[in-house]
Every structure is written in C-alpha cells, then in structure tokens.
Length: 111
Image (cartoon, rainbow, N blue to C red; front, top):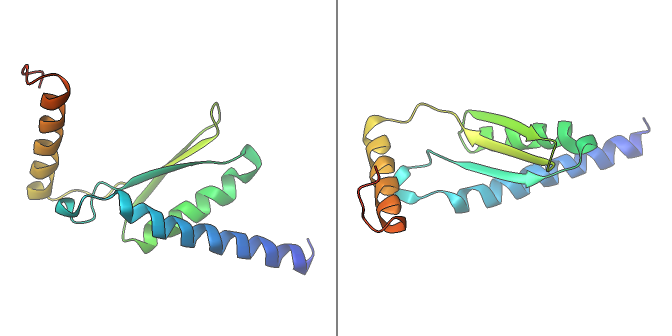
C-alpha cells in the first residue's frame, strides 16, 4: 500500500469518526444522561471493517462501551452503548417506553 493510500485511508477514518461523534449525541435524550445511545449507517461489505473501527472509536470517545453488528443483507452497521445503566436512569427509560407504548396503542394497557 502506498503512503498516499494510507494517508487517504487515515483521513477517511478520521473524518468518519468526527461525523459519528457529532451526530450520535443528537439522538440521545438528555434525561438519560448519555446512556442508551445507538446509531446505524450503511456501508458496503468492503468498508465494514473500517466502518466498525471508526464507529467503535467514536463511541468510545463519547464514553460508551460500544457493541456493533453488521447486517450484510442490507449493508447496515449498528452500534450501541452496552454500559450497565444505573437503576434510576433505567427507571426513566422504562417510563418513557411505557408512555410511548400507551400513546401508540391508545392506552390499552399493553405493557
């Protein structure tokens, strides 16, 4: 591999990390204090290894314990925060999901 190619690959990796770090927090709910983060992106199979590395780096930079999976059928990389969620924040998350389910199902007690 030429030094020019390595330089380009490094620039692409650094750019991907920066974009993920910028976009991922937009999906976090403030009341969950940074827990429960997840994001996904499309990438070709030949980009999956670098995409996973960039996603894991970005997630670690956000303070997450990253987990990833790649779905080759639709070429989607999924990244989520696998840290243990403190009980008080887990309670807030549960209440938020119960409220969302109640709204979706017309408050018919589906939980």
